[in-house]
Image (tube, rainbow, N blue to C red; front, side):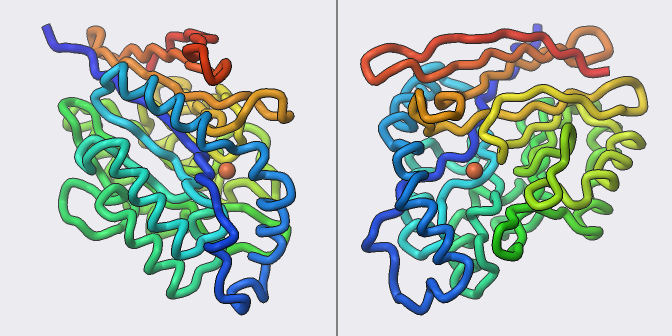
Length: 302
Ligand SMILES: [Fe+2]
């Protein structure tokens, strides 16, 4: 009998930014200034490294086969943040057991310095073929394939939307078709939510085009972050609805107006001619107590 495949989905870690990261001053003569005000004034009290560490310990203790990280590892796209985020990825595991993609905070400004920082995440944000950072990438593990997309783009002040763009969308079609021919369980990962209410300033700009690809090609599971809420939607696929699941931020301490930090645990099992997907949600309850398993759901791929 083939063993079920078990993986963790985490997102929106927002690792801490420190005052020492904030140099030179000229790096803040743009929208980063307002993002820094938000981080130091409010968000640093919401996102706590202690919560992240507690949940990561719980996740690693469960020995998942793979970990998916759907973006927003950092806050302001500063050099020191990228270096710490890379070290944090290394602490999660080796690149062959991690599939990561960027979020809007990982590319707050699309500058050469930010691209250099983002490149540090390679090979955690790279596929099986090579060590370069290209999207979409494909990581195949047993009969499961992780398809990593990037929706990270620089946006105007007050916006945090994302976009795949035509080139990624076309490649995604090919990858989905080929993976289906190979009988693989196709897990599509992107930071911005591709289903549900699409906020113009904060959503996925090419949501309709993405939905059209899924309608034609299908997928077994689509996973995202960005909203800091655990959520469940679906997109129509050629053989039935495709589950679209969002995970809450990993690092939120309770009582701050957002759901407390969560990680999602998925168990994939081939049952006859489809994949049965079991979801368990693990939520932070406090520094001295284990995370609670707050929900369980079975999602069937069509
Ligand atoms: Fe986020």
